[in-house]
Length: 538
Image (cartoon, rainbow, N blue to C red; front, side):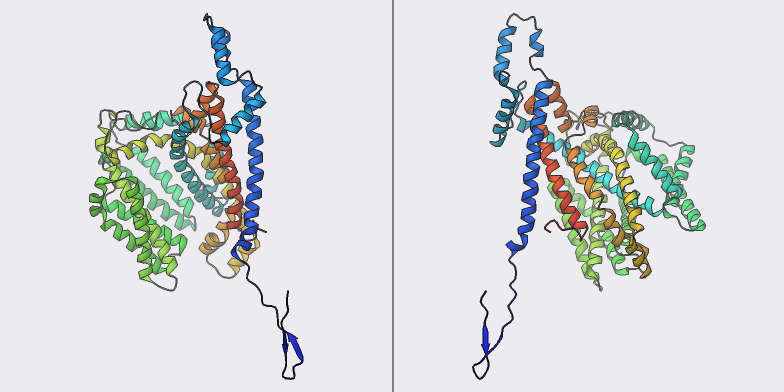
């Protein structure tokens, strides 16, 4: 590197100039990250290659596609055996057949079912969206509820609520999924459909449910004895009043949220969002969120005209518009920290929009329940849609919901228990760290200590299991899909095994294995995002 020498007034050489620091280019800064990704992808592909080889070998030696012909009394059995042997290349060693299959995969050909002739690509094209529909909702609900209840249980350690959550989690974790699915079909579908014939709730059931609801809320809120009794009484009375209203007005036969229901739910959401993100002492954030609720309630009737020609792109567009309006409301309220108000108002606006969507779906319940294909038994026990049912966007959406409800609940109950236990254990470990005590000693509020300091670090252990669970569930909830007749990845895998169809089984395994590779890489990236001490490009 050349050094510039300066001279003084007499021409004598002076001190050399200090070297000018050069700024690293973006490519140089991103090189370690790209190297990391390339190394991980290459190693994962090698693992996937070995796994596919092992699965192909096991499948080839475990099944016999000629079994039905070997004992066939047909006079042309030998000819049929020869034809099938040539079709499936059974006269070729399994190792060679594997490399033949791998060569086709590298060219984009996943093969086809030798029994139906349908290509594996088309089978995956119909199975993956069905599984995504089933798994996406269950994953979001299981993770959300598991993290929320696990956090509350950790913050209420050794209370009745904590003991109850621990007991329920262990019970759900130990239950087999097929047993849960059968019970849900028996009580959640058949029992509820019978109940709709006369949807009146007995007084003793109202009393029992109200007391349980009051005790649950009291345990969650905690505090002094007087606070617990007040919350217990308020929750018990509110639950009893709601159940009486549902029972006496036959609300279940023609449900709706209405303006009052949307306003109450939106207001509750606004207080909850502000309490978690900004604190109820932040008046500007609270006013911003409540204003977003008021705007949503005011738009209820004009939106009915927009909903006439509804579609999913329109609904998603309205959700984006709701978030933008919420940000605008928060920005207009201003204050020292506009970002907090904008975030609270945007979340509340989207939530209020979701309540408006649910209310519009409820409006077609009366007509849907009386359709000849439904016949007053709306909760389905099998399939993903009602055969022969026709209607607009809202009828079809409600029909899809009634079919997906029980499978989603089954998957949520099984997965929820694990996420609850992981979150509780992680949260308890984090809350006992030195930096948490330091944050409290500095005078920070308990909300700031819990939400900003403890919650993020408590999510780090979950980052290990969540992506892998998501990838595994996308492989198909085999038992749940079988019991509820859901044509997804799990059903495709079982069908391939029963038909001894190597291309179908290998196509399923290839998709699941690829998802697991992506999930394992995402785990490292999420770790780096949650913990500043971890750098994937170090």
